Amino acid sequence: MTHLAITPLHSSLGAEVAGVDLGQPTDEPIREALRRALADHLALVFHDQSLTPEQYLATAAVFGAPMEQHYSQHHMPGFPLIGLIWHRNGQEPAEQWHTDHTNRERPPAATILYGVEIPSAGGATSVANMRAAYTALPEDERQRLDSLTTFNGLDGKPDTRQEDLDKYGRLIEHPMVRTHPVHGSRAVYFHISKATYISGMTPEASKVYMRDLIDRMIQPSIVYQHRWRRGDVLVIDDRATMHRAHGDYDRRESRVLWRIIVEGDRPRRV
Ligand SMILES: [Fe+2]
Image (tube, rainbow, N blue to C red):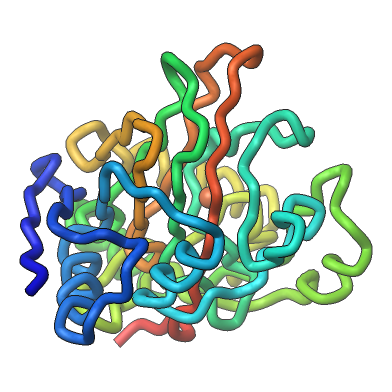
Protein backbone atom coordinates (compact mmCIF):
# COMPACT_ATOMS: atom_id res chain seq x y z
CA MET A 1 0.00 0.00 0.00
CA THR A 2 1.26 3.48 -0.87
CA HIS A 3 2.20 5.67 2.05
CA LEU A 4 2.46 9.39 1.34
CA ALA A 5 5.07 11.35 3.27
CA ILE A 6 4.30 15.07 3.15
CA THR A 7 7.03 17.45 4.33
CA PRO A 8 6.55 21.25 4.34
CA LEU A 9 9.20 23.14 2.35
CA HIS A 10 8.52 26.68 3.61
CA SER A 11 6.70 28.25 6.55
CA SER A 12 3.91 29.66 4.37
CA LEU A 13 3.34 27.16 1.56
CA GLY A 14 4.81 24.28 -0.39
CA ALA A 15 5.34 20.64 0.56
CA GLU A 16 7.36 17.75 -0.78
CA VAL A 17 5.41 14.56 -1.35
CA ALA A 18 7.40 11.33 -1.19
CA GLY A 19 6.23 7.76 -1.56
CA VAL A 20 4.34 8.02 -4.82
CA ASP A 21 5.36 7.07 -8.36
CA LEU A 22 3.26 9.34 -10.57
CA GLY A 23 3.85 6.99 -13.50
CA GLN A 24 1.67 4.34 -11.84
CA PRO A 25 -2.11 4.43 -11.35
CA THR A 26 -3.11 5.69 -7.90
CA ASP A 27 -6.13 4.52 -5.90
CA GLU A 28 -8.91 6.85 -4.81
CA PRO A 29 -7.79 7.35 -1.18
CA ILE A 30 -4.38 8.49 -2.43
CA ARG A 31 -5.96 10.76 -5.03
CA GLU A 32 -8.17 12.33 -2.38
CA ALA A 33 -5.16 12.79 -0.07
CA LEU A 34 -3.23 14.53 -2.86
CA ARG A 35 -6.12 16.91 -3.59
CA ARG A 36 -6.39 17.71 0.11
CA ALA A 37 -2.62 18.23 0.38
CA LEU A 38 -2.72 20.66 -2.54
CA ALA A 39 -5.54 22.67 -0.95
CA ASP A 40 -3.62 22.81 2.34
CA HIS A 41 -0.07 23.41 1.07
CA LEU A 42 -0.83 25.16 -2.28
CA ALA A 43 2.30 23.80 -3.99
CA LEU A 44 3.33 20.14 -4.09
CA VAL A 45 6.73 18.86 -5.21
CA PHE A 46 7.40 15.29 -6.37
CA HIS A 47 11.04 14.46 -7.10
CA ASP A 48 12.62 11.87 -9.40
CA GLN A 49 9.61 11.21 -11.63
CA SER A 50 9.95 9.63 -15.07
CA LEU A 51 6.81 10.15 -17.15
CA THR A 52 5.68 9.64 -20.71
CA PRO A 53 3.18 12.21 -22.00
CA GLU A 54 0.39 9.63 -21.52
CA GLN A 55 1.44 8.91 -17.92
CA TYR A 56 1.74 12.62 -17.21
CA LEU A 57 -1.78 13.33 -18.48
CA ALA A 58 -3.15 10.43 -16.43
CA THR A 59 -1.54 11.61 -13.21
CA ALA A 60 -2.54 15.27 -13.79
CA ALA A 61 -6.17 14.14 -13.92
CA VAL A 62 -5.94 13.46 -10.16
CA PHE A 63 -6.35 17.24 -9.73
CA GLY A 64 -8.99 17.86 -12.43
CA ALA A 65 -9.72 17.43 -16.11
CA PRO A 66 -6.82 18.59 -18.31
CA MET A 67 -7.95 21.62 -20.32
CA GLU A 68 -6.72 23.16 -23.55
CA GLN A 69 -4.13 25.92 -23.23
CA HIS A 70 -4.77 28.97 -25.33
CA TYR A 71 -1.37 29.47 -26.93
CA SER A 72 -1.79 26.53 -29.28
CA GLN A 73 1.50 27.31 -31.04
CA HIS A 74 3.20 25.86 -27.93
CA HIS A 75 1.22 22.61 -27.68
CA MET A 76 3.30 19.43 -27.67
CA PRO A 77 3.03 17.79 -31.11
CA GLY A 78 0.57 14.92 -30.78
CA PHE A 79 -0.46 15.92 -27.24
CA PRO A 80 -2.49 19.14 -27.43
CA LEU A 81 -3.27 19.10 -23.70
CA ILE A 82 0.43 19.49 -22.83
CA GLY A 83 2.07 22.88 -23.33
CA LEU A 84 5.82 23.25 -23.83
CA ILE A 85 7.55 25.94 -21.82
CA TRP A 86 10.75 26.44 -23.74
CA HIS A 87 12.54 29.65 -24.75
CA ARG A 88 13.78 28.14 -28.01
CA ASN A 89 10.27 28.32 -29.49
CA GLY A 90 10.19 32.07 -28.99
CA GLN A 91 8.67 32.27 -25.50
CA GLU A 92 9.91 34.64 -22.86
CA PRO A 93 9.84 33.31 -19.29
CA ALA A 94 6.68 34.59 -17.52
CA GLU A 95 8.50 36.71 -14.94
CA GLN A 96 5.50 38.75 -13.81
CA TRP A 97 3.42 37.45 -10.88
CA HIS A 98 0.19 35.90 -12.18
CA THR A 99 -2.21 33.00 -11.95
CA ASP A 100 -3.04 31.05 -15.12
CA HIS A 101 -5.79 31.38 -17.72
CA THR A 102 -8.13 33.76 -15.88
CA ASN A 103 -9.88 34.42 -19.19
CA ARG A 104 -11.81 31.15 -18.78
CA GLU A 105 -15.18 30.82 -17.07
CA ARG A 106 -13.78 27.87 -15.15
CA PRO A 107 -10.09 28.71 -14.88
CA PRO A 108 -7.60 26.05 -13.84
CA ALA A 109 -7.68 24.57 -10.36
CA ALA A 110 -4.03 23.74 -10.80
CA THR A 111 -1.04 24.23 -13.05
CA ILE A 112 1.24 21.22 -13.20
CA LEU A 113 4.84 21.51 -14.40
CA TYR A 114 7.24 18.64 -15.14
CA GLY A 115 10.95 19.46 -15.36
CA VAL A 116 12.34 17.72 -18.45
CA GLU A 117 15.47 19.81 -19.12
CA ILE A 118 16.83 22.06 -16.39
CA PRO A 119 19.60 24.66 -16.71
CA SER A 120 22.64 24.31 -14.45
CA ALA A 121 21.79 27.55 -12.58
CA GLY A 122 18.76 29.83 -12.28
CA GLY A 123 15.38 29.28 -13.92
CA ALA A 124 13.43 28.67 -10.70
CA THR A 125 9.65 28.95 -10.36
CA SER A 126 8.31 30.99 -7.42
CA VAL A 127 4.85 30.56 -5.89
CA ALA A 128 3.17 33.11 -3.59
CA ASN A 129 0.48 32.30 -1.03
CA MET A 130 -2.41 34.64 -1.90
CA ARG A 131 -4.47 33.23 0.98
CA ALA A 132 -1.85 34.62 3.37
CA ALA A 133 -1.71 37.82 1.29
CA TYR A 134 -5.44 38.33 1.75
CA THR A 135 -5.27 37.73 5.50
CA ALA A 136 -2.40 40.22 5.88
CA LEU A 137 -4.27 43.10 4.22
CA PRO A 138 -5.87 45.76 6.41
CA GLU A 139 -9.56 45.13 7.09
CA ASP A 140 -10.76 48.08 4.99
CA GLU A 141 -8.78 46.93 1.97
CA ARG A 142 -10.06 43.36 2.34
CA GLN A 143 -13.58 44.78 2.28
CA ARG A 144 -12.79 46.87 -0.79
CA LEU A 145 -11.32 43.90 -2.66
CA ASP A 146 -14.30 41.73 -1.63
CA SER A 147 -16.54 44.02 -3.68
CA LEU A 148 -14.39 44.22 -6.85
CA THR A 149 -14.32 42.10 -9.99
CA THR A 150 -11.95 41.89 -12.96
CA PHE A 151 -12.80 41.50 -16.65
CA ASN A 152 -10.34 39.10 -18.24
CA GLY A 153 -9.34 38.61 -21.86
CA LEU A 154 -6.51 37.01 -23.79
CA ASP A 155 -3.33 39.10 -23.50
CA GLY A 156 -2.30 38.39 -27.05
CA LYS A 157 1.38 37.93 -27.70
CA PRO A 158 2.77 38.71 -31.17
CA ASP A 159 2.53 35.05 -32.20
CA THR A 160 -0.97 34.41 -30.78
CA ARG A 161 -3.09 32.59 -33.35
CA GLN A 162 -6.35 34.11 -34.56
CA GLU A 163 -8.19 30.85 -33.80
CA ASP A 164 -7.15 31.16 -30.14
CA LEU A 165 -8.24 34.81 -29.99
CA ASP A 166 -11.59 33.77 -31.47
CA LYS A 167 -12.05 30.98 -28.91
CA TYR A 168 -10.66 32.63 -25.80
CA GLY A 169 -10.72 36.40 -26.35
CA ARG A 170 -14.19 37.08 -24.89
CA LEU A 171 -14.11 39.04 -21.60
CA ILE A 172 -14.83 36.93 -18.50
CA GLU A 173 -15.67 38.46 -15.10
CA HIS A 174 -14.18 37.07 -11.90
CA PRO A 175 -14.17 38.23 -8.26
CA MET A 176 -10.86 39.66 -6.99
CA VAL A 177 -11.32 37.57 -3.86
CA ARG A 178 -12.30 33.94 -4.23
CA THR A 179 -13.21 31.24 -1.76
CA HIS A 180 -11.30 28.00 -2.12
CA PRO A 181 -13.76 25.18 -2.88
CA VAL A 182 -11.84 22.59 -0.82
CA HIS A 183 -10.15 24.66 1.88
CA GLY A 184 -12.92 27.24 2.42
CA SER A 185 -10.45 30.12 2.84
CA ARG A 186 -10.39 33.33 0.81
CA ALA A 187 -7.55 34.46 -1.44
CA VAL A 188 -6.75 37.44 -3.64
CA TYR A 189 -7.30 36.44 -7.28
CA PHE A 190 -6.33 38.33 -10.42
CA HIS A 191 -3.99 38.27 -13.42
CA ILE A 192 -2.52 41.71 -14.02
CA SER A 193 -2.18 41.40 -17.77
CA LYS A 194 -5.30 39.33 -18.51
CA ALA A 195 -7.49 41.65 -16.38
CA THR A 196 -8.27 44.44 -18.84
CA TYR A 197 -9.96 46.44 -16.09
CA ILE A 198 -11.44 46.28 -12.59
CA SER A 199 -15.15 47.02 -12.10
CA GLY A 200 -15.70 50.78 -11.77
CA MET A 201 -12.11 51.70 -12.67
CA THR A 202 -10.37 52.78 -15.87
CA PRO A 203 -7.96 50.27 -17.43
CA GLU A 204 -5.03 52.53 -16.48
CA ALA A 205 -6.11 52.92 -12.83
CA SER A 206 -6.82 49.18 -12.69
CA LYS A 207 -3.25 48.31 -13.73
CA VAL A 208 -1.79 50.80 -11.25
CA TYR A 209 -3.85 49.31 -8.43
CA MET A 210 -2.99 45.71 -9.34
CA ARG A 211 0.72 46.58 -9.57
CA ASP A 212 0.52 48.28 -6.18
CA LEU A 213 -1.26 45.28 -4.65
CA ILE A 214 1.38 42.87 -5.96
CA ASP A 215 4.21 45.06 -4.68
CA ARG A 216 2.67 45.36 -1.21
CA MET A 217 1.32 41.83 -0.84
CA ILE A 218 3.99 39.53 -2.24
CA GLN A 219 6.75 39.49 0.35
CA PRO A 220 9.44 36.80 0.75
CA SER A 221 7.62 35.46 3.81
CA ILE A 222 4.79 34.15 1.59
CA VAL A 223 6.90 32.91 -1.35
CA TYR A 224 8.20 29.39 -1.96
CA GLN A 225 10.90 29.34 -4.63
CA HIS A 226 11.23 26.02 -6.42
CA ARG A 227 14.73 25.34 -7.72
CA TRP A 228 14.26 22.70 -10.35
CA ARG A 229 15.85 19.29 -10.56
CA ARG A 230 15.29 17.19 -13.64
CA GLY A 231 12.34 14.86 -12.99
CA ASP A 232 10.53 17.19 -10.60
CA VAL A 233 6.78 17.61 -10.83
CA LEU A 234 5.45 20.85 -9.30
CA VAL A 235 1.71 21.17 -8.76
CA ILE A 236 0.51 24.72 -8.11
CA ASP A 237 -2.96 25.51 -6.72
CA ASP A 238 -4.10 28.33 -9.01
CA ARG A 239 -7.10 29.17 -6.79
CA ALA A 240 -5.02 30.67 -3.99
CA THR A 241 -1.55 31.47 -5.36
CA MET A 242 0.31 33.51 -7.93
CA HIS A 243 3.49 32.26 -9.57
CA ARG A 244 6.33 33.51 -11.74
CA ALA A 245 9.26 32.13 -13.66
CA HIS A 246 12.83 33.33 -13.13
CA GLY A 247 14.58 34.20 -16.37
CA ASP A 248 18.04 34.31 -14.75
CA TYR A 249 19.52 31.35 -16.62
CA ASP A 250 21.92 31.02 -19.53
CA ARG A 251 19.90 30.93 -22.75
CA ARG A 252 22.53 28.68 -24.33
CA GLU A 253 21.26 26.03 -21.93
CA SER A 254 17.86 24.42 -22.25
CA ARG A 255 14.96 24.81 -19.83
CA VAL A 256 12.02 22.64 -20.86
CA LEU A 257 8.95 22.22 -18.69
CA TRP A 258 5.85 20.31 -19.74
CA ARG A 259 2.76 22.14 -18.54
CA ILE A 260 -0.74 20.79 -17.93
CA ILE A 261 -3.59 22.89 -16.55
CA VAL A 262 -6.65 21.21 -15.06
CA GLU A 263 -10.12 22.68 -14.90
CA GLY A 264 -11.47 24.11 -11.65
CA ASP A 265 -14.70 25.66 -10.44
CA ARG A 266 -16.10 29.03 -11.43
CA PRO A 267 -14.45 31.48 -9.01
CA ARG A 268 -16.85 32.82 -6.39
CA ARG A 269 -16.64 34.53 -3.04
CA VAL A 270 -18.76 33.11 -0.22
FE1 LIG B 1 1.83 30.74 -15.42
